[in-house]
Image 1 (cartoon, one colour):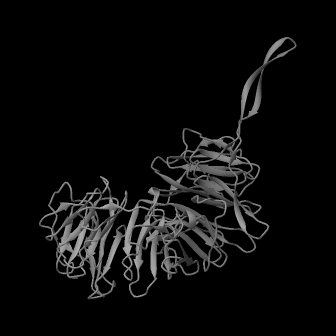
Image 2 (tube, one colour; image 1 turned 30 degrees about the horizontal axis):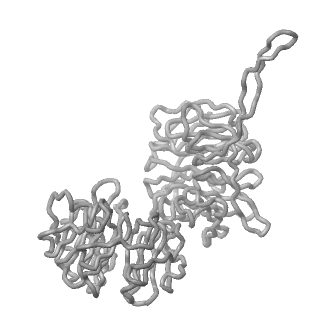
Image 3 (tube, helix red, strand yellow; image 1 turned 45 degrees about the vertical axis):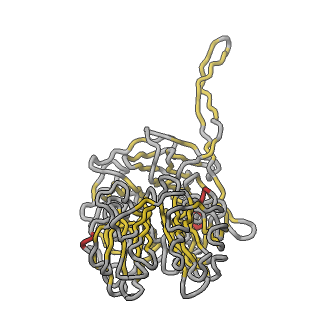
Length: 583
């Protein structure tokens, strides 16, 4: 299933073509165990574990036939390389469940350590009996990782939400190790150096730490803004290690972690929130990144995606949800905290500069005395300026009046972003998408749409079909047609929203994005719930369906290429000249 989360893959050391994968789902307590006997070319589900949400998996080094799996229900063991399984923790136990980590004694496969979402446990007899090994561990500690010294099996390290602990008594008593700040105590993984047992690496939510004296002192090897999910130490090459990170993909080191370089060619875990193709003599494509902080911001390519460079200075780690370009070429970014403009620097670099000042004007009645009579007059005044700090979901700077959709409402600027006016209107705060021409503007939120014919000074509700639900995108085509993408399909109006018709023959209906390919005159539509790109003729509404293999979040055209931002796999490209005939 596409929505399986794969946290654990094991290669059998005796039969390397055998792979074991444990999976779970985040939307319900479901998952399973999968076996491949041909190096991953094909997989089969093992019935004994169908429906089990497997959160941990370990293989015995003393007897590789033995596998142990930790699930939301308890602990299961296989003695025939994963073909059959039995539960070895008490069925229905109120204590041994939600098993996040496992380790098997390297000499005795009946000795198993288990870390749950609240405390660690141990069995010495293959699961016939279990004992809680919590002495020295702070109560209610989620245990993320367990490692056992392969030469001194009574030396055990565990990492938890409350820090790192070490036991030299096989878990009878733990001592909390010092040297890692409390802010970084969520240590997700521990790994012991196979070449030096005194060296242990700790992957935390604030960087990579290492001890060279078996846990007495620790040193930070990376920046503290790196979240580390896993560590791989190469037993065949001294000094080689890989980091699996939240924001930087895979990082590699050949010098024991003193320096790292990206190792992401052919792989991406990037969440792209926005795409923009610039209107310049040498067009660029810009991609706005979400949830990447140090490795986020905006990336630019001028060679159709063959190479990218980061433009993040000034954004300070903000997520980028929207990108737009003005008539005079200015590039704007809508972020998780305000609006920024891309400014060229004297040294040839580019830097983002905040342009989020809200300067609203109001009016009030002022009484004055004229020729002995009291006269009421309407007086205009300017409210104290403040900074727009909300998430900016969409921008349109293509006309003289710039328009922004935010969690605080709709804002416009008539002075090229130096100041913004607007706010909450019609009882709605969060707007999702906007579109503008020289004489009218449209903005949509999930439950409705508004329009303005006076450059955003006043907004009126737009009548919509009663059946429409959860609007995600709005687009104004060059011929003036208004297009809406919603959870139940695509709607088009040819009379500025007075009447609508629904495109009922599309192969799927949940739509996240609509855009126009100026070279072909086609409308491009994508959905996060489907892997197909829809190419719709603006006049006839005939469509072409192209399966990209990835759920699509944003779609844009650049020259003869179509580019799509995927939900979790970066940007993909497709030649506009190779699609099949409309159907």
